[in-house]
Amino acid sequence: MDAKKIVLLVIALIVAGGTAFMAKTMFSQAGAPQVQAAAAPQKIDGPEVLVATRALPVGTIIEADSFRFQPWPKELIENAYWLKGDDDMSSLTGTVVRSPVMAGQPITKGALVKPGDRGFLAAALGPGMRAVTIPVSDKTGVAGFVFPGDRVDLVLTQSVAGDYGPSLRASETIIRNIRVLAIDQQTVSEDDEGNKKPRTRDTVTLEATPRIAEKIAVAQTIGQLSLSLRSIADNAAELERAIASGEVKVPEGADAKAEKTILLQIASRPVDNNPTFVTGADVSRFQRRSVPQTMSMGGSRSSSAAPSGGVVGGQPSGPVVRISRGSNKVPEVVPVGSK
Image 1 (cartoon, rainbow, N blue to C red):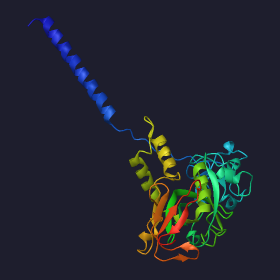
Image 2: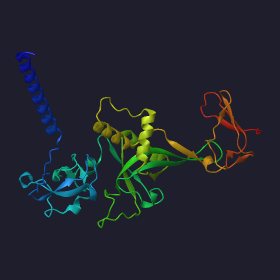
Image 3: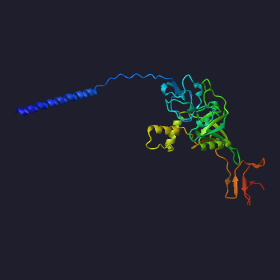
């Protein structure tokens, strides 16, 4: 082997060894964990301000767990902030959020409306919603166990009279998942000592859509309205039912946060479709299942079966025939067998 080849081989070995050494050093440095001391939390030098413990959308009724005090940099303090020791925080319970507040964000004095202030009830309403008041008693108001912020169903009880025989007794759930805004003129569920005490109520103010408010106004003229207190878990079941029926449609491409917001809004809306009902026959075999109707007999005559007998109290109590004569729009009722 000549000297030239020997020199080239030695150089190749040196280059290969140097490359291997550099690669080993590089990988060993990359794989070694870098141990760094955790930075100690910096203590904020400033007074404590009132911040929201959770997101407070417009219309939220403030409760004791809706806010807390948190240290805030003194150079960022604004005059509109609530400061610990300077203000009476007990007066905030029962106020309503007028502008939205994010979780952890300071609550400003202009963001809340107190009971009795102008626009208080309007601020408590969600966008597009209306306030409607109905009278209640211990019997129709769940014995006073309904408080502001609860959700209830509205049950209409009525007696439907027929042509003959006893009336049809019926009740139906006409509205579901409707929010209670106020009891009488109180918008908080607790007294001054922080206790929830059921007591006799005279009126309940509810949050409803314009159409549902119209239905409630008509329902009060038909029969008696009663409140049925809902469980908190029923909102999730109501949402699942709406999704299964196709009533809920989440836009395509919405992120998880936007989708959650949409679903929460849908879960909290009042519902006036698919009403359920019960008639007297569902409770007792001696009650009717439907309203007694007069059966047509081909145009001008009709007959209706009624208990046998003659005329009681000026009204026929047996089988009758209704006869329309000429242009007279009111048919003549003639008992069968009479002259």
